[in-house]
Image (cartoon, rainbow, N blue to C red; front, side, top):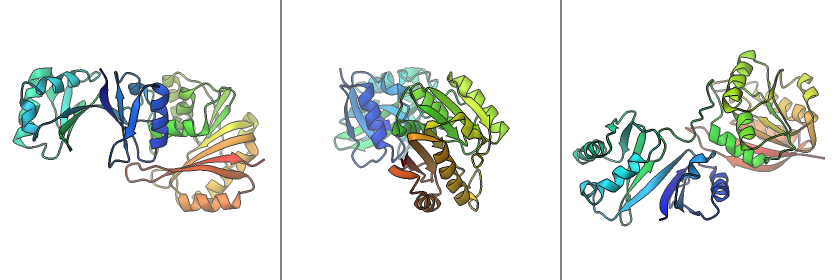
Length: 335
């Protein structure tokens, strides 16, 4: 029997998420969720393949009920269906309810009944399984997130650092630059290695290199690479210098310059972006691709105009992430 699932993602990454769904399951029926720019509805027999997605934030099972109000879900006809979906959540020991009026007596009764039916603890602060209740044209939907933690959480991230790239954005960047076995890949200003690791998890590369001037960042990157089970050579160097270029040339260059909030400063970021574009061009192989994730949009645009003889803009993707609106620039090396 085919079931309904909802895949949520960061707004702006819809094209990458849709493509990944199509690759994971050729017979999936997928369509945007009406009125949303961060969700895709998918109809499949099982969510197993969806749970391996790298560009998605979460996958939830959608249970549709033709009832006038949430209180009706306490009936013996509907509650067992919700409880069965909650029991399918991987590794859940507790659950929480997200809904308008979730602190009402009705939702308190639902939480108590579900706790009795599943043996899980109702924990509105930190519950593993998340149940969202929302109105639908025919009644009410209950969405049950199928993992205790969001898919955007990465087990390999054993060392987290301020300003680290969101892993689903990094996975989307890997898809945008393309994944080819013959590629020589470098992650400039690699930090804790998110862009580099997500590229290597997407598929093998002929060579992978991470460059950063901070030995603490390189140590964090090394730990995360090991936890992810992938390998890259790490080079201590400043991206504005030239010594790291000896490891090239490179077919794919990835960079996440400091945004000037948690890391770096706005004052020096224009010079940094300009140096990045110039140094990357010097280390680029013919037909190389460069992906730059940046929040410094005006500075990046000015730098691109000054280096139009080096890089041609292929795509620009605007992403919405917790109050930030970074953009991913994918550039092609001008021959």
